[in-house]
Each structure stands twice: as structure tokens, then as C-alpha cells.
Image 1: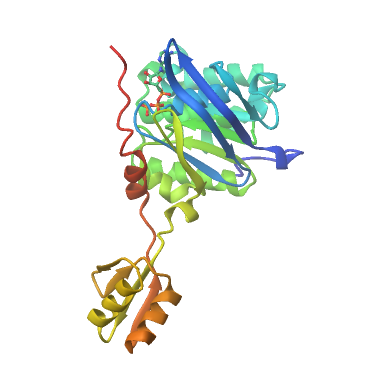
Image 2 (image 1 turned 90 degrees about the vertical axis):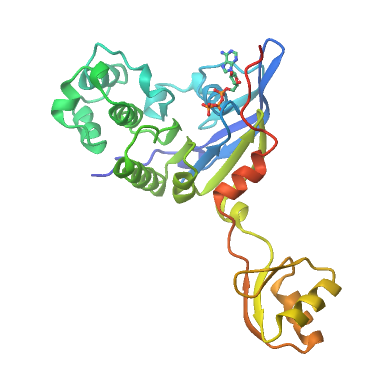
Length: 312
Ligand SMILES: Nc1ncnc2c1ncn2[C@@H]1O[C@H](COP(=O)(O)OP(=O)(O)OP(=O)(O)O)[C@@H](O)[C@H]1O
């Protein structure tokens, strides 16, 4: 069953933009000058330590928190100006915010009515997120966190939106649930949808995100395609005489370090080739350095922005 039944007209606009978004609470700035874009057909991972400003930014994108300054648009308009927003943007910001006394199915039926949707769509999304009819009939106060996340996602998908904004959607899911969520988001984006998701699970983000936005202390620290951000500059090389090659590279001003096999250097592959020629050394292996892991990038980027403390 397709996640999305039809691509919306004007799909090229199916994106999220933030322009210099700033949020102050009293004299405390919790988000400062955040500009970002999430594009159609791509999953954008939004990362940052606790208190970095992810949820506040997502709330501003969805019109739930008013920015102190700056502008946010979804599908080219401020969220609050979208007609029937649930038909365009699926939002999951707090999976625990469901009415505890209603069943999952009742919660979805109510929203379906408000969005003017056929009630059969409720059963479709329940199937899609893997909630059984018994689970759907139970009051949400009896739900585990993982079941709440599934219901929250069913709610986000209900209106067959072009855009998904999900704050920590994999929290509370078991390993099979995490993999299921990853596949679901991938096929949503492959169908032309736009996904912005925050997560603390770096490996999960690495596995699914096409683009990354890293935030720390309320400011953007890095953003771009995952391929670009995770590409490490430099070269790994082996030769018939690594000592001579290391001397030649160092003499040419390149940084050289021993690698597990051979050398790792800041030089490009061409520069390594030239140094080898100058030193009359034969290369036996030459390749661009392996990519940096997301965990390494995340800790490098956020090192000075540990957990934000709430002021006393
Ligand atoms: N309504 C509010 N009033 C005052 N401060 C707030 C309010 N909402 C959030 N903050 C503060 O803003 C900062 C950013 O919080 P936010 O929830 O956006 O971070 P986050 O990156 O989503 O963190 P986490 O990963 O822990 O969910 C925090 O220091 C938080 O205490």
C-alpha cells in the first residue's frame, strides 16, 4: 500500500524554509538566526544536543511557537496560513500529547472528520503504522511509548501530506520499529515527500538522512548534504617505502599520520602521486580517506555546545 496516494500539485514547493528564525524567552535567546531548508524527495535530519533548540525551531516551523524574529514557511506559506494544514503537513511533535481517555481509533476518526477525510483512511493509516484493531480500540493511556509514536505517526500521515515534521519519532521504538520507521520515511521521501526529523539516534539519522542540519546553543553549526558533510578530506596510501613517502609528503607541507595500513595524509591523491614520484617510491594502494562517521562529526561540531543548562 503506498504511503501517499497522490503527489500534490506544485510539489516543487513542497518544502520547509526557515529564515533567520530567532526565539527569546525573557533575556534568554534559545534559537538564534536559524536558516534552513528541507527539500522534496529528501529526508533532512535535524541534530543537536539536549536543549540545543530543535523542538523550539520545529514548533516555530509549525506555527505553534511565535518567533521573536525571522520567518518560517511550509509549502511557500507560513504554516498558520495553510488551508487545512493537516492535508499538507503531517506533524509529530509530542507523541504523549494525545487525549488519554480516547482510543487510538477515536483520536484518528476525530481528526479525519476535522480534515474532511473519508473514515476509511483511518484504517489505512492504522495498517500502515502496524497498530492492530485491538490496539487501536484501546484507550491511549494504556499505550506504550512505542505505540504512542506509531499512533502519532498515523496521525501525521492521516491527511496524506506532502511534508512531514517529526520531533524524535523513533524515541521508544524497538529495533524492529526503528527499522520500520526508517523504511517508511525513505519511501515517503522517494515518493516526492519532504521529511524533517530530529533524533538523538545518530546511527538512525545517518542511515536515513540525505541532508543534515546540526544545531548547538540555538545556532546552526553545519548543514548540507550528508555525503558532503561526512566526506573526509585527504587520502589513505600504502607504498613500497612508507617512511620515504612520509618524509616527501611532510617536506611538501602535508600532514601525515600512520594509518592501520600505510599512511593517512591531508594531501589529495594527486599530491600523493607527485610526492611518490619525487621520492621514487612505488604506490601500492591509493584512495580518498573513508568518510567520517556522523557520531564523530556530531561531537566535533557540538563539542563547545554541550547540554544547554536552564538558567537558575
Ligand atoms: N516555553 C519556554 N520557556 C522558556 N524556555 C524554554 C521554553 N521552551 C524551551 N525553552 C528552552 O529553550 C531551550 C531549547 O529547548 P528545545 O526544547 O528547543 O531544545 P531541544 O534541542 O529540542 O532539546 P531536546 O533534545 O532535549 O529535546 C532549552 O534550554 C529550553 O529550556
